[in-house]
Image (cartoon, rainbow, N blue to C red):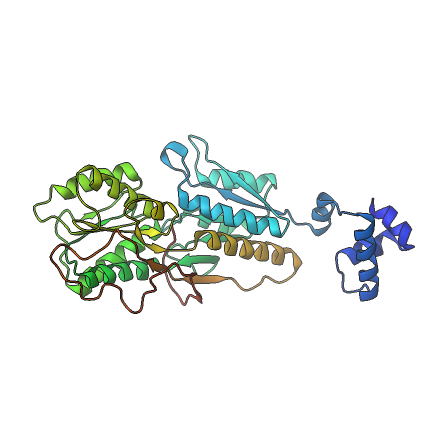
Length: 372
């Protein structure tokens, strides 16, 4: 069934049928209903290629995988991509995921995709505090949405988690359990989410009067092996910490494995808290206490925003930039408890939910931060 046959069947022009199928306002509602009913009955399906050419929109969103040693994708990004792909498919858009070849960087790959006309927009993740990818897209005149933020984020669309607040909340929980010797396994300080989580740890430690002893703060912990090495150093510390606050769940799980290998009982001799709320955190023993973010829902929302931005860019005046900040929530499991022989003063702060809760969407007001 072609549009020509459908038009002949209805006794209408092909242009009228096409405009009715695309819901143009100059076509009467009765005609639109009649055309759509006939299309359903006769099995007509519009050509995706023709529709895209007519609209002048490349209905494909690009996602360039951040360069990583070993070219491996972490579990958090996998959840984001799952949600993003699902949302784009619901709008009949495609997702193009591109890796960075050896000797190249993300900006080169993005520029190649833009010049080839293969994408109608981008989603950017794992933002740096000063990010060349965002700087490039600002100048490229192509719609984009950042999953996270840079330090200067007033002029583009983004969705982020309040990372600094999340780590203040995690510290509040540990202090409420009775911990005062709390070490931090942080990520790359150039990554904005890692920097903000580090700032949350430092500000909460200062507020609670928790001394950050030399050797308690470890930056650049990006994977399980680095976490194991950092834990080995902490176990040699003359004033061993009673709790570890970790920049991601993957780092926290590496720390738990290292502690178990060293014969340290996690949750009693050493407490551990992570960040992400990944399913693997529930599967290990003891279960990982974590600051949870709804990664899949983040991907879905980012997909909705980028399609909205890309569609608006060809349909008329640009829509207002979406800038959304969500909270992480505390998920309590067995890996964090009061330190040995120390009574808990507030094991679960009243202001923190104890179960996995969906983040409440709250508009950000001049907030600076990043998402993992």
